[in-house]
Every structure is written in structure tokens, then in C-alpha cells.
Amino acid sequence: MTSYTKPLPVIDGENKPFWEYCRQHELRMQRCQQCGYIRFPISVICPKCHSMDTEWAKLSGKGTIYSFTIYRVAYHPAFKDDIPYVVAIIYLDEGPRMESNIIGCPVEDVRIEMPVEVAFDDVTSDVTLPKFKPSHVEAMK
Ligand SMILES: [Zn+2]
Image (cartoon, rainbow, N blue to C red):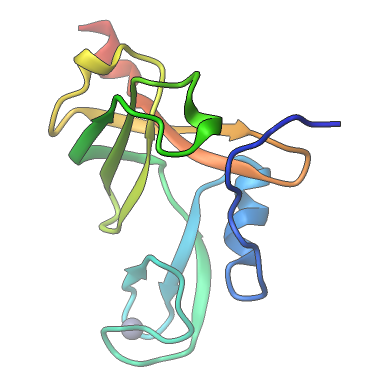
């Protein structure tokens, strides 16, 4: 049914909840039940206190751009029609950093420390990717 040709995440037992919540358009990450640390990437134990007691906490989906690059060359043929596009490290309000695309604005508008919020992209019937767009606050300025 789909002609999506870009690489897709490998969804396995450990990361399955993360991707299931993305399909429901919720950004959730593991929060340690012992010390409260929210961690990403996904791991079995808390890197701060080594507890395995965790819950999937719903995040605000808001953050700021920590760093980014503009891709002007398609290193994979499926991205040919997307260039130029932005790959960024987003510093989430709850602490973790994650890599994603910045969408919804021209690439030349992207700035370090720009406020962004998650924008879910249903790329296939099974996979929803969490991307980020400029936040409404920034867009109204
Ligand atoms: Zn902990």
C-alpha cells in the first residue's frame, strides 16, 4: 500500500513501546521510578542509579534546537526529493536530547536554540516518526 522507500527503524522488544506511543502521537520516554531521570536512547537500566524500575512518561513534545545541519546531498536515493533538509539534535524540555528532522519551515529559517515541538509523521501504517516543527510561539513572532 505504501511506496515509502526510506530506511525505517528496527522495532524490537525493548524499543517497541516508544514506537507504539509514536503511532498514538505521544512522545514518551523511560522515566526511572527510583531517581526520576528521563533517559533516551532506550535502555534496560537507568544510567544514573542502575535501577531497572521504569515507566513510560509522556513528554511535552517541546524543546529547542541544540545543533543542526542542512543536508544538500542525498546520501540515500530515497532522500533525493527532500534536499535540502535539516537533521537536528533537539534538547527536549524534560532533559533528553534526540535526533530528528526539522520540518514546517524553510531550511534557512532554522536556528540554534529555536523553540520546536514534536510533529508526528505517519510514514507507513506501522511506523510514525517523531519530527519537529517550529513552535507556535515562535511562528507568531
Ligand atoms: Zn535512576
